[in-house]
Image 1 (cartoon, one colour):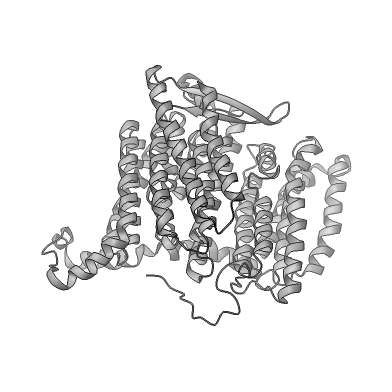
Image 2: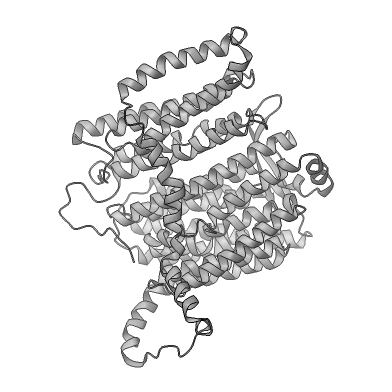
Length: 622
């Protein structure tokens, strides 16, 4: 029975490939391709669920393929099927099927018709890999696919300023969640000394035994899981990204931010519940986070002027309640609540254009304001204060900028003295010294040797900070990103004498993506003369092929699962010792800023209004 799980992964992949080969102008073939792919998947899901129930609903686990193996580490793909997967599978396939039917007509004659359906199928691949994942590594593959497909769908109207700007904002929050998951995997390797599966996590005796002697490890892993779940499910302090994501087409808003993608954080908590259920402090924190998010999001939803934003904050509030249910151990209730919230928000978003049109007509004839609301029972000062805070969305965006992004920009701006020539003059001799120290450790004093990994990791972080704030030279920003990965590889090489093939595995995708990406930017600069990063240029309009190639290079350089670098990142982190918190912090921070810098280059060079456009641009949304 477990071998049948391949069906649910392969069908969306096959549909994605077929649709990718279909000509752009064949709207009927494109929509029917997606319709049949998801329809077959839905039918197969219903048949398999019935068959699974008749056989006593066993928990299925399938260790599929080992991608990389050493004496003390193995990266393998693992699939799991239980009641959590059943609910997410049925809800996901049914909603995606309905949205696909809706989109066939809604997206008619749009320039990006093929791009839309391909991205929906790409998202569906990631969604199925995520819900069928049997370990964190497999889940992370689907997690990354969900992230990049979210960015592409929010920026679907890529010739407009606001969708592209908001897509970058959403990706920046997703990147924090990505690194939270990487750090959870890093510490779990040191806790279990293996690639642990979710099936093994359900063994209470084993989990309890390990956490008794490593309580700090357990709390750290649980907090990183909570960070990833909160970022993905738009809980505080990350709630402000969800309304911004509504800049995409209505069908993608319904499938992503109303129903499926936004509930993946809940899925992560449900999957890892056996691990942190005995940690009372973590359960209280999850419940408190959900409770505060519920209160604040409800207030914000009540004052929104945009129907999409109102639905987004209402969904955030409901997910906050689901967090409380998961923390309290009500797994079945949380699954039922997820299904109800997903169906309701999908319906609301799909009918929202019609409802707005109806209400605009209706308000002129028989609109009567509510006579009294719950807020009227508060003292007037509190009522007005809550109203103003809700109008300003509790300044969530400002807080993120003030305490996270602006400090990084300030540090990066202090590095304006760096130029390509100075970077190379500095990089080559210091890197040669690092290699000399690595292969001649006996001549390096132990006190210096101990701090070399942190020093080299800090140099890499400095370079990627400069890349993040670079406003003029796109090629220099790209080069700094690639050099950062070399510094990361060098810094961690000092920890253990592992085989050079592991470093090569990590750097192989970086080198290929870096070279092709640099060539793409050089080619574009020859054609367009100027590609600074001070504004959005929209060059995908005239150079779609270069834009596509560079997007693939961006994915490869950021560790997306299309190159060996994806496995290499996990392998590299497994060599950071559990007591090297500073090194882990610098490395993870460099990965966060690395991803932001990469997507920033792509967005500013290839997306947004074309630099020679004569039309006015809207710089603020409702």
